[in-house]
Structure formats: C-alpha cells, structure tokens
Amino acid sequence: MINRELYINKLLAYKDTEFIKVITGIRRCGKSSLLKIFKDEILKENKKANIIYMNFESFEFDDIKNYKEMHDWIKERTKQKQKNYILLDEVQRITGWEKVVNALLIDIDSDIYITGSNAYLLSSELSTYLTGRYIEIKVLPLSFKEFLDFTVLEDNISIEDKFIEYVKFGGMPGIITIKNEADLYENVIKGIYNTVFMKDVVERNKLVDGSLLEKILKFLMSNIGSQISSKKIADYLTSQGTKITHNTVLNYLQMLENAYIIYKAPRYDIKGKELLKTLEKYYIVDTGIRNVTLGFRNSDFGHIIENIVYFELLRRGYDVTIGKTDTLEVDFIATKSNDKKYFQVTYTMLEENVKQRELNSLRQINDNYEKIVLTMDKLYNNTSEDGIKIKYLIDWLLGDD
Image 1 (cartoon, one colour):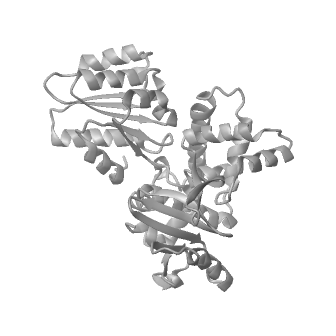
Image 2 (image 1 turned 30 degrees about the horizontal axis):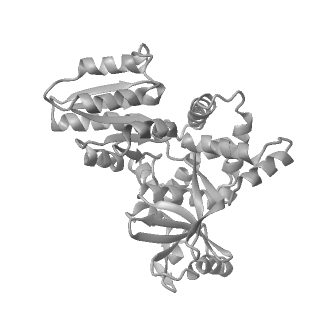
C-alpha cells in the first residue's frame, strides 16, 4: 500500500477537529488506501480508538440500501463517552447520506471522514446541511516525486528515463508494479478509464449514449495546452458530422469536471486584473489515461509536461489560471495567500527565437512577483535573465517549490 505522506499529513492536521474531512478525486487515485492508512495512524496513537469503517463499494455493505439503514448500522457501533472515528468510503452511493452525517455530528462525539469520486458529493445538498463544517482534501494521482519514491531506481536507468516513464505511464497508484508488463498495464488503465467514464459520468448523469461525450473528451486530450471554447468544440464536432450546440458541450464539460477527469484553468487578464469568460485550457488528470486512449507521440511531449506542471502546482496548494498580457500568453499564474508566481513551460529553449518567446511573455508583467521558465534543457538550469529564473523541470518537480 502506497503511503501518500502529503495527504496523510493533511488528515492528521485536521484530526479531532469539528470539520468533516471530505476526500475527493478521480476513482482509483488512492482515496480508499488513504483512509486505510489513516485508520492505522489513529490506532498507532490509541489502540482502543473506536473506528467505524464502511466501504460502500464492498459487497460487505451491499445490504445497506438507504440512509436510514446506514444510520442504524453506524449508530449500533458507536460508543458513549469517547470519540468515534467514522470513515465512509464512496459514500455518494447512498442517497441521502448527508442526512446521516448531519445527525452523527449532532448526536454523538464523532470525527468524520468521507470519500467520493464525483463532485456531486459537494453539491448544493451537502452545502445546505454542512455549510462551513467541512474541509475538502483533493487527492490527485502520484506526483513525479511520489512515483520515484515507490519505484526502484535501477543503476542503469537515469532519472531522465524515469521521468519519460512517468510521462508515458502516468501516476495512477495501481500501475506502479505492472508498468513494465505492457498488456497488463494497458488493460488496467483502460479498465480505470472505462469505469470512471461509465460509472461516474454516463450512469451518474443518466446518459443514454456516451459516444458524443467521449468524442469531446478525446478532443480535449488531443488539445492539452490549447485554449478551448465550447464553440470551438461544437464547430469541430459539427465539421466531423456530429451536430451539437455549444450549450450541450458546456453541460458535457461540466460532467467530465465533476468526475475529476478534466480540470479547467480559467484565463486571467493580468493588466485588466479580471477573469476572462472564454478560451480557458483543460488538463487531463492522468497522462497515462490520455496516452492509452490516444496513443503516445513524442510530438506531444511539450503539451504533456505542461499538463504535469499544472497538476504539480495544484498539489502545492496553488490556485492556477492561465494569463494574458496584451497579445502574449503566460502559461500559468499560481496564487496562494499573498504569494504569486508566473510560469512558462517549454520542452526546449535552445533555439534563440523560442527562448525569447518564452521570456517575452514574462517580461511584459510589471510586478515584483517571481517569474520562472521551466524547461527540459539542463544547460540553462539555475540561470536567470532580466530577473526571470530558468529551472530544469525535473529538479523543480523534485523540489519543494
């Protein structure tokens, strides 16, 4: 079982607080394992702790069909005059579960942790019952640093080769031990993709036919790092013989976001200091899913590393937008509390015109926040130009910030 220290530390920090801990993320990204590891951490501190654990995808709880039965099952196992740790895995499978959680908060001394694979978990119903009383912990597939921690770095394989593995195979925890078995790896990733797509998107939204939705998802996978609008997608599909309105596209995009398959980076006008309503970018939660679905091409490498940087910034706690300065674009604006950083991401900047293009986007920003170019060129590592830092991407991924 992979110990996700980043997330375990977050759970421990909020342990025994009044907040409900809501753990969200794409199916199979490690949420259930996280709960089990956390359960062990509780028992390390107190061997007599009363822990009530339910996994609603397990056959063990197949007889529990509604929230009243769920409440009764939990209530029978609670203890008076001590803290009850209640861990509920994939709780969204029980309609009305939020009523149970609300009742437990009121009726017993409880510390509650729940997981879910769909953003509907944090829908208006939950907000109504639990406003201001929950903390969301967003779980992502493995970072490159975690990927290295849980794989063997053979003497004859460089860290650059390991990074190429990460780019190709992605970071879903279940693939760590099988990535060198091509057929098995591909079947596992396809299985994850099909389960997420069918259960968390098609079935959850009661779609009769998922083929149109899948065309939209594949379009996004093919256009990582490109500015996208619902009209652009609708026009493309119409040109391919599939007529669709941009409003339908918007609805489908929201479904994919809700299942944590895609993440949207809004566009921000740096000079005008406002979010723009069009031409955002979408990033795919795992490059392995993307590569198995479309096939991996070396020409995609630049876009894929941009995808990796986006999710690394999210892991580090930043809010991430893409930036606009006059006619130029900035890959990422990363904001956290009073801190802000600007990033350009490029596979190579050995050609002078490429180097100047990347630097010019940052030169136009007239403030004192840190400006960074991330590249796969070691030649420029830890250099700077006009106050703009240039860093080797792999070193940055393995660092703390």
